[in-house]
Length: 126
Image (cartoon, rainbow, N blue to C red):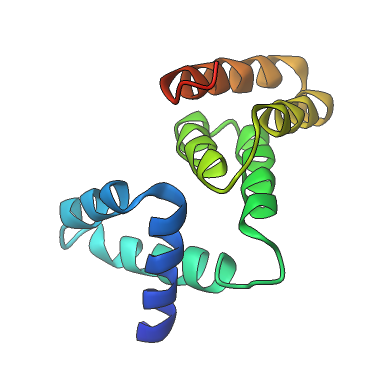
């Protein structure tokens, strides 16, 4: 594991998802899941999110559309919170859901709206 890339990834991951959430996940890792947590933090967050070519807000909107397209709604909710942290407005989140509905189908758009409403209400934005 590249220790510097891991540190960079840990910083990016905490900045988007919140330190408490990230630390809870890392603390819960055991011998079975720890290698994945470390690899994901290094690769996804250090290499991917660490590339400053795409601003965090834009990257968050990309993630919402990709996760929505894949139907990964648990992860979608986590990244919806991260998108808010990274400065996405309710209108921008809605536009991401519209893109999912247009390119992946209305039923998937409905799932995204359901998850978005839950997160936005919990965050006091609706």
